[in-house]
Image (cartoon, rainbow, N blue to C red; front, side):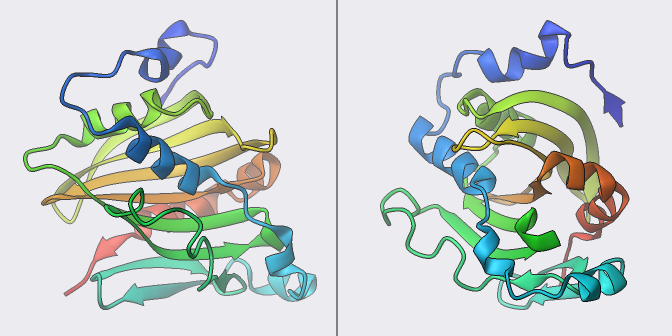
Length: 213
């Protein structure tokens, strides 16, 4: 993985670069980033037993979505949030964006999200990644970026430092993957200190994403 110095002005080139002609409407891409980065409420996890989380948190189990044909690992002590972000945004804005699953843990300080967004034919995953960052004022630094392939499809894995809408700092690992006319976005992140403490597990979760038949 290529490490980028956050003091290098080139790190912010993706964020400040002008929007390219023919790119998607800014509101769609920006709302997509808002969905990804919106902070998860601690109230979801008030009932979780902290000792149980510490004992089982390192055990990864598989979540499989048979309808959308993908799977991803997550810590067994985390919770699938079936109502997360439900009806939060108008249908006309969310028409091409689907939040498929949200899984939270660590007392609400970390969150996994899998998002599927309809895009154009012959799109380029690098271009879509750069457009998403360029249209979001929330992302401040691209800490790292790596190009890879998952099940034969081009993907970009990165670590982003950003500011939540309420002003709190956060860090997330993102996976942008282009398959046919759909852009898949996988995000695992939240509190920076907890993110760093669980980096190895977060990396394993990101690497576990795959398509199933």
